[in-house]
Length: 321
Image (tube, rainbow, N blue to C red; front, side, top):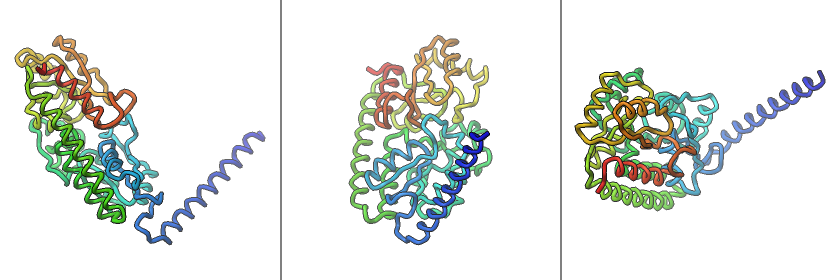
């Protein structure tokens, strides 16, 4: 019994100290009018998921404190925002997100009073990768009509990702002018690296035996377009949807016709569909990572390493000469 009492006492003490901390936090945030109110004295950026957090970290460098709303290994499309995360957004100096990818984030950001809201989708042009609109309906049926056809996976094209990086850099300079020179320098370095990555993809995929690749989910439309390839997705833009038997037969015939050797699956989503198709059509399977989050299973520790692993996988599957 006494253990229970001790525990109860501890819980109430913790609750009191948490409440006190919250009260103090609220007071100090109100009384200080510096640009960097928020939960640290750095430039606090809340990013929606890994590709946005990576940009914020690379550009923000030592001056930014970056947190991601999506945990490593969590499928970003399904994200729900917790009360704690809403509070975190309210306290941040900037939110960096990609409208149209995570409806819960779009809604949370629009409802906060945060001063600097950076929508990556507005920093480059989003395209409609035809034939996949129906897949979007299930994924975000409650968003505006015109959003259905827009493919949000811009970070998988290094050129588009570099355009977004430049926009993010400018937004950071404006929001935290004291460190503008560093943000400018960091952005230029990142863009240079992305240009180098683009060059590697261009050269590496220039001369291949086939131009067609099969993926589990239609994340690679921009990448395919950039390097003259054709992506055939088993299940459209929503990684969770199951393909019909007719679609599987169609893909088997296409594999024969186009000399496709490999079905790609990804790290965060079940590989069951890809493996079934591969078995039926006597194809190999490999990982092509849409880089929506880095986990222990990722082939690399950051965006650049995983993209280079993707390039190797594509070269092998397409028969690069």
